[in-house]
Image (tube, rainbow, N blue to C red):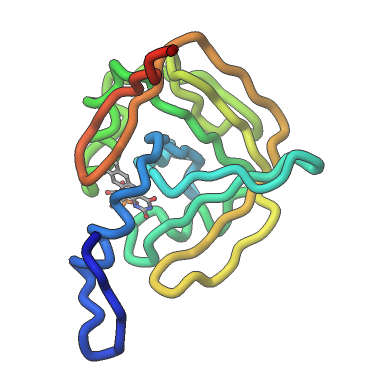
Length: 170
Ligand SMILES: Cc1cc2nc3c(=O)[nH]c(=O)nc-3n(C[C@H](O)[C@H](O)[C@H](O)COP(=O)(O)O)c2cc1C
C-alpha cells in the first residue's frame, strides 16, 4: 500500500483526490429552482445518508459553482440517484454554462422544483442545515418523500463510471 504522511508542504491536491477516489460512490443529479423559477441541476457524487429518524441526507457543493446561490436560497431540492443507463445525463449536468434541461422530461415536485424521470431512486428534500466545508458548502436535507425503481445504479470510482457486480455466492 502506498504510504502517505501529510504535512502542509507535501499535501498535494492530486494525491488527495486519488486517495478519495478509492471510495466508490453512486452518482446523483440534484435539482432546484433559481430566483426566476427556472430549473437548476448539478451532478453530485458527495451524496450520503445521515440519519434514519429523522430522515436526513447530505451532499456538498463547490463554492465556485454557478448554482451556489440557488441552493443556498432553496427551500426544497431533489436528489436523483442515477441508473446505469444515465451516464449521458451525468455528463450533461456536470457541464457548466449549457442548457442542462434542454429536451429533458421533468415534472413538478415540492415547491414546483424540477423532478427528472426514469432514475434509480428519488429523494425530495427540504433544506435543513447548511455548513461551511472549506471550499464546499455542506447541505443537509430532511427527506419528505422518496421512491425507488429496480434499475441498477450508476457507480463512480477512480474518476470513471462503473457498474455494480454482486460478489459470487459461495
Ligand atoms: C461524477 C461527478 C460527480 C460530481 N460530484 C460533485 C459534487 O459532489 N459536488 C460538486 O460541487 N460538484 C461535483 N461535480 C462537478 C459538478 O457537477 C460540475 O462542477 C457542475 O458543472 C457544476 O454546475 P454549475 O457550475 O452549473 O453549478 C461532479 C461531477 C461529476 C462528473
